[in-house]
Amino acid sequence: MIQITVMPHSDLEQRHLKAWSRIQDSDSTFASPFFRPEFTTLVASVRDDICVGVLEQNEAIVGFFPFQEGRCSAAEPVGGDISQFHGVIVERGVEWNVEQLLRGCRLNSWAFDHLPTSQTPFQRYHYHVGSSPCIDLTNGFKAYCDEKKKSGRAIEQAFRKERKLEREVGRLRFELHDTSDETFRHLLDWKSEQHRRTNVVDAFQDEWLVNLLDRIRLTQSASFAGLMSVLFAGDQLVAVHLGMRSKSVAHLWYPAYDTAFGKHSPGITLLLKMAEALADDGVQRIDFAARQQIYKERFMSGAIPVALGVADRSRLRSCVRRNTNTLRERMRETPLAAPIRGPVRLIRRVGNWWADR
Image 1 (cartoon, rainbow, N blue to C red):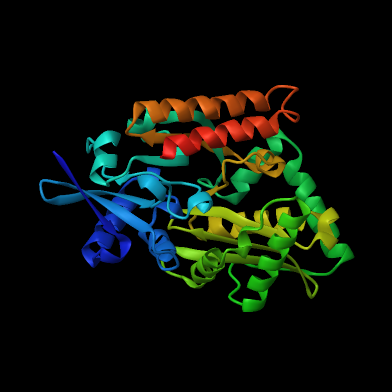
Image 2 (image 1 turned 180 degrees about the horizontal axis):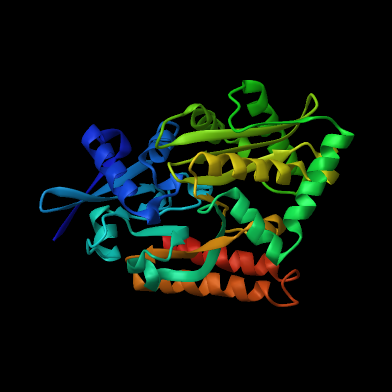
């Protein structure tokens, strides 16, 4: 029989963090740095709404369910939209169910959008199942490149642009982790400019996110580390990426580049240099977020099935959410998508507002 105790993250003790790390290390399902206790701890250091459900069986800790509290006992993954893998970190063979989990954590619902489908207790709550692309480095960087050459020209084109960048701008210099504050400021400026250019809400206006990324980049340990990788051409910083890694998995998170060098694709050059260096350092996989982008399709060599949905204790609320989200997805596929986008968005917001009450 599973017992579940929910507590603010600040109440976790060292024994909890050791058990969490042990469970995460023991199952490759949880290899992503998003499943590490350090990630949740860092988010909790800049937010006061992070809680953890502790799962126990026969007085032994067997799992953890970290979440971010919302209104009306509706929760979401730790960090909200920035979390690109989430779920229940639990020992293999332990039986648990979603209804008990939500009840034990005093939650009405938990929304997810990058949940590994291997978490089968959530299956009935899936709205949509997709794939989170990745670069498989199990056999090393050379093997990855050789395999990609068989399936397309993306790698060869990337290497040609790399040589052209060095020829036309200056000698290339790559660092896997740059600790400088100046580079971090460049990243924030470039990402904010990218958001303005593409009419996306600038997430970097949120102070807590900037503080979190600052703390992650300065965190360095064997089990969890921030990665701020850089590419210089001559004395010009042309691309930067801020992400994080666990022992065996790195996550591509916040890439940015100087648009003045856009024709040279410096971001792709940086990605491949990161892949080579990380493979040499024992990383077996680089994860991308499950959002469709052309460069991911070109350079991926594997994928992890992930699901979007909402686990809800109320069948009626769950039905309303499912129908409003299904309507949105179907409308996206029709020629009428643009003219009816406003009304559909309104219907979805009203449905989700009602479901959250």
